[in-house]
Image 1 (cartoon, rainbow, N blue to C red):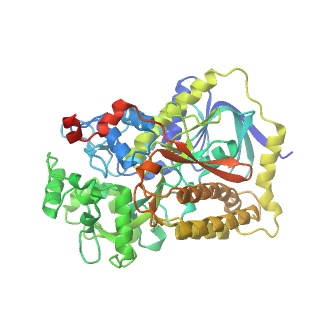
Image 2: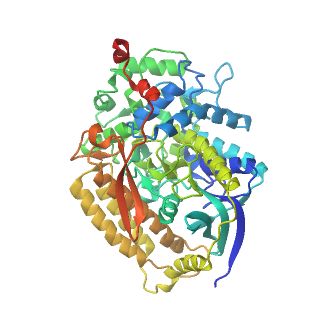
Image 3: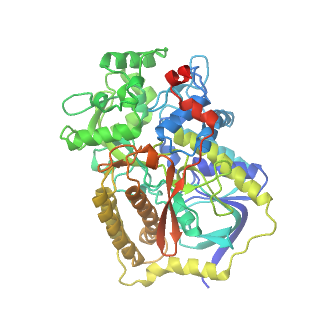
Length: 608
């Protein structure tokens, strides 16, 4: 058999972003032996691209804030499809996780009296996002890495995991290879934590980094876990649209949080007309109210003015921009204009340093002197591996997941800033859950030689296909299918066509070939990535077709209304059934009565 290296751990963490690092830190602190695997170099995780801030109800700026309001905002943003327990734990524990980062050395922006500064963000009732300019994710990764290095766990960089092993129904390890030279590695592990991020590589225009090919979701699916709510794909409303080489790169919501205004090619501030009736009371009705709010934000003073319409939820803003462009009111390069140049240039550079340099260096646009062109970019997937809220374990014993590759926390649509707090809250819980699982085990799970042989043969197969299809040509076909048929707006006929096309592409993937050797061979890497991308793409398409309503980030042209009676109580769930994907609708966890009371309107409460 082909040679391979062997490493043995109690807990193997796959992914070294915020969730993976926090899980590894926690498991290690609890006394178990931990290994950490990352697809890229340590420090290159996609978490560094998170700019706006980390949401936590510290109440440093708005003293009325509390976990109950954060919980309610999260549930409302997710159109109440969230796993209520995950949303509750997140809101309750986020403040302590942020303070923990501060104790570990994170340097946050400060209020005048020295507290962590918090800014406004779409869908949040109060100013809640703790931030470091617009480089919050970078500071988080720096802090967690420093803590992790001193924790002393092993790190395997530029390593891809291709297969999870089981002993009976329990996780027993994983198999992978090093990208630089293709050498294989076997990980014997009693528990595995997946923290691999999202599925952006399945779409042609995305803010996600190259690593985001749905690896964790694919591994979990093959191991017997189920993927829930995959139809909910968030298109961030503001990605760069020009020049072409940077199309899709994120323009942080912090620009709008600091007062940025969206206009169409007629100069109209169009978001007023797209505010849903249910949320209009929370937003400014005219420019005068919006200006009052912005001026108070600039001065750092409190105000009763309502938020500008640009701070509506991401799904709503993305659909608004899409509609403006489609109806001919877009910018020259297919987006709209986002303008913060009316503010003092030095304030903009201080508050949004990454945005200033990003546009100046990549697009030769000075955002302090004029507007930027922005448009929707595939940004985040709310769905993912179904996990237990408290422990983060999937239905496969010993398999845990945290961060974007897990599902349930965000429901139908994630609020900005909740991703970073999600990482540290549930990264910690996954690490703790994995460590406790390992400590409660008796004996060591086994890995069969046959399973190892199969894993090696799967990786060697592309080289044996002398007339194999170019994997990058297959990826282009996948991109075309997803953007054409499973995009921002969806319709039954299109999705049925898209699913049929995905079945054809699935066959193409089986014949993807690689040429040359294993060292630095991206075509070979893509052959493996395509398999995970296809699992996620099919789950998104089949789940979207099955949900006959519009909810959050899932917009159906043929079913434009939200249907709580039929669809408000179920999650979609995709699981492996032989060679087929099985889709079910499973009951959403029932929220306890004391939390339901938070959603009773004041008038109703007063009349009871």
